[in-house]
Image (cartoon, rainbow, N blue to C red; front, side, top):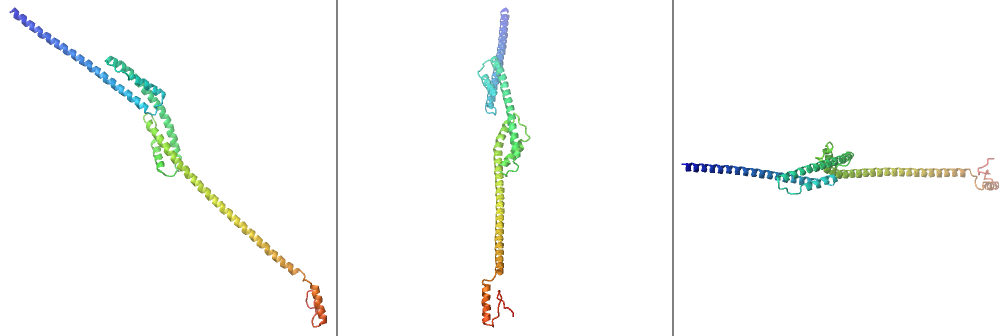
Length: 275
């Protein structure tokens, strides 16, 4: 009986011990899994943060401030912060802290550079819009239509770090069409001035020709009038001039009258003298 009791007690202890060991092993495996899951999660977070950092670097190098020295300096630091492959959760945590700090510093430098750029782009945009406003009387064209559309879109729009890229594209487009519309206006103005100048010269030439013709006619009239007066004066002088050899002729006639009485004597002018 005692042996049976001892055997029974021994079997119960063994069973209890086996159960206890199994529970401990199970708890240990659970803990291992939890640590593994935590490490996996940390590694995934690290990988994601590295990916975000590389995307930010790529965005900056393709942005309007890709030549900004301060921003590029922060980009280099951020790139270095992504290097390495930490294997433990503690190592990942340490690297993650440094990466997050550098990511924030780089993003702040980038946003500051974009804000400064937005002011520059805004000023350029405003200047172009002012220039476009002075081209209202330019000839109609597709370029003028595009210009007016861009002016309407951006005239009352504030340029910020969020839309500076689009605003800069608008600046490039406006520079192109404003230049073309301005040239078409200049060409039209020059053509109009040339036409007015040609018209003025034609009027001056016509006026000069009319004056020359009038002066010529006046001179011809004066010459004709002078010749007429000259001829009339000559006739008068001829009428007043004494007859050539009048006395001699009269003497001959008187002598003939004396010889031939039927011929009456005449005076100096050749008229018959009454007796």
